[in-house]
Amino acid sequence: MTSVAETPARPLPAPAPPGWDPFSWGLVCYTLTSLIAFLGIVLGHDYLRPAPFRLTEPTNPLNRCANWDGQWFITILKDGYSYDPLTHSNSAFFPAFPLLGRLIVNFTGLRAELALLLLSHLSLVTAFVVLATYLRGRCAEPHGSAGLYGLLAFGLLPPTFFFRMAYSESLFLLTAVLTLYGMERKWALPLIALLIGSATATRAVGVALLLPFSLHLRDRSPTWPGLLLRGAVLLPLACWGLLAFMTYQYAAFGDPLAFARTQEHWRQRPAVPQAERAVSLLTLEPLWSIFDPASPCYWRRHEPQGNPLFSLHLANPLYFVFAVVLIAIGAWKRWLNRLEVSLAAGLLLIPYVTRSHEMCLAGMGRFAAAIVPLYLVLGQLLARLPPPVAAMLLSLSGFLMGVYAALFAAWYRFF
Image (cartoon, rainbow, N blue to C red):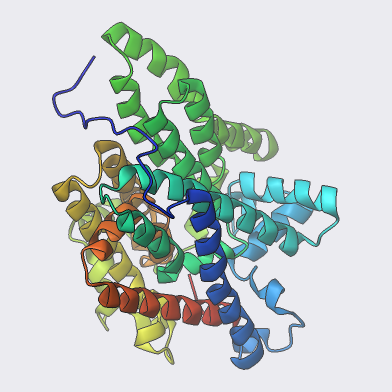
């Protein structure tokens, strides 16, 4: 079965220009950009005054890489899951990251926060190499600069500092870019389904990978009966991580949706009727409420002493809009194929529809940074700028990433 709108397949890898070795460039970009984030962590730990409720906490720079959500992952690694329907519970966090961290602890004897940090960086360096290979084949620039610029953007976009922390983002990114690469290379369909299933065991938004996978199944199924049969077998397989987590939570807590229900205790404004919430989402109220002094989401209510240049709470809606614009440009220019567009749309819409109203878009910058197709578009745009201008933009982005890392390390409200 073929589709009139089907994007022509592009073989991978494309002829590589001199010096464009994905393995080497992936390692170099990972090392140099991660050094900026680590220096930010050290500066934040040693020179920034921490939040008052953390003043007496003995710590070191590596411990600070497990701030905020990292602390929840540590509790899961050490003590397992718990669920209390009346308050915040660690059942909200998906299991792949802390369980792999526990394996590292068992084999190496490392402390929990160091094991999780090691897992993040192993996942990230591998993601850099796979993304470098993917960009080499997907970017049309014959001189290869679009691929290199995309890789640098992947390392320097300010919210990507989270990829170097004890967070599950880097593990999710690895599964996402491997899935895109596997579909481009036409790997065995069960293998791709297993990869997607691991993404659904890592983060809730892993289900967004089902959108490009469904399109990929259609492209590789010559008949409708074949498509229906493959879908009936492979789509449930592609949800194995989520289904396993739900089965565990039903057995342990009597509620397969405990991970979703406990999210009700994470909110930055009171609950409203569903009709009012729907109107809010349709009118994009979560985006502009951050700038409205009358709104409970107004950024200065959460960061009264914050600098607007370095406030992630203020920047979260800007990163969301930035991602939407980039994906629209990529689709319009046909720099992105329909698999990439569908994945990006899912990764933007799922957190917006499910949590943006309650959480005042908290975390949206981090969610947007995990959209792999963004870096194809950024690479194409940067390659079309004069090199000094592109270098200046990347330098400013890297500086801001370092500042974000420093504020995160000092326990400021950074999510």
